[in-house]
View 1 (cartoon, rainbow, N blue to C red):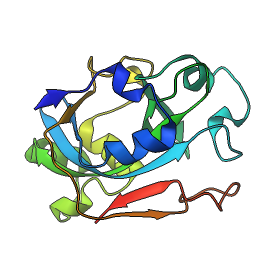
View 2 (cartoon, one colour; view 1 turned 60 degrees about the vertical axis):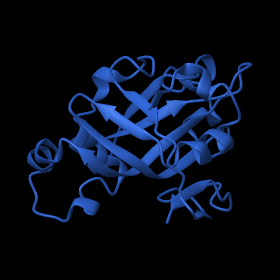
View 3 (cartoon, rainbow, N blue to C red; view 1 turned 45 degrees about the vertical axis):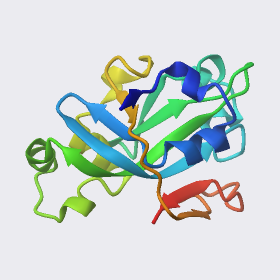
Length: 176
């Protein structure tokens, strides 16, 4: 199993989004296979639409963890992308747990099927114990990604979820 480093992210955001499907994300003793992602560049739905202190990480890095707080209660996990100063990040929307399932269940505090433990960006961050403290860290330090060669046989593409602008862009990728 090969650990991915920052160089994996030094390419177009849409390419990185598709390539992240099937990769394994690991935080501490917990891991899961990525099954759903969304790409964000400098479109109107992206934090990078306007360059701000919060969105600067999307302009100035690739291969970094970008975590932000949403709805006053949830964190969302992203990885920065693009080289040459173009902004970009991929939101990890869902994983299927592989290891540390008892820890994940305890963190979530709900009795649901394993496939539903990490079936949304907020749930995923709670389950993996990802918070704002990992924001800005390099991939491979606190949040690790691995490629074990697994490839999904089918990937669907659709519009992103929960946005009010740039809704026509089919930048959501779901492994089926």
